[in-house]
Image (tube, rainbow, N blue to C red):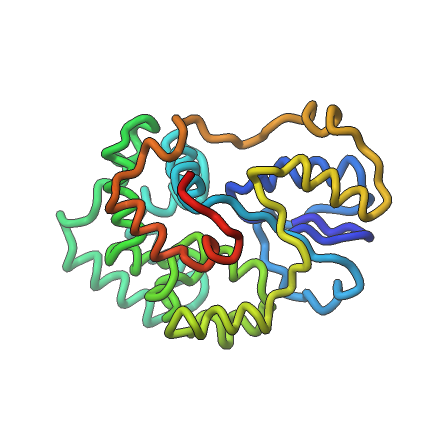
Length: 269
């Protein structure tokens, strides 16, 4: 995240967050913390705007997968090295039950685990993406322990993108005490209404325009030419995202990431 005297920016993966952070560092006095970190002490920053960013969910999943195809990203590394990454995660957070559960799944699913490495072999392979997405947003994905997803009852309500987004943009203690346990979409939406800590969400689709407006609002002047000259960073290489979807995978994202789609007015095209 970026913590400045005029604002705090929380980095949501694959939403242009590296670009935003780079722009902010060049224009606002502040410092960066660990990337994509949650703001545990959010109350200490209530005197300034807390900002994050978002992206069309259909586009986000293609970008996340394609970035993994190039060998990048913690999500890719987690899946490629499963089940050992799941076991290490449980040990790190001292969750004995999760360790046992991981070991049981390791034994009972020998020879039946998805071949994640093969699914990450070609960023232009639409069939691989569709299989990957159905695994991540389907029954297989409910066992993804990364970031506490598998241990959160709310995994039955939302997809991994929405889980990451809400973990980042809502009050840390409330998320862990209430949000992660939401059992219905309505309960989750009410939670977000009550406990969101961000005052502004930048949309990746108009990122430079919104960055320009944000900087102007805190008294910083920069031209659009200067913003565009900074360029993209950590970009994934793939075709236009909508070419990767069929009807089934389209509906899967529409159902699992309904929260972001409805809140920010996204459509497939």
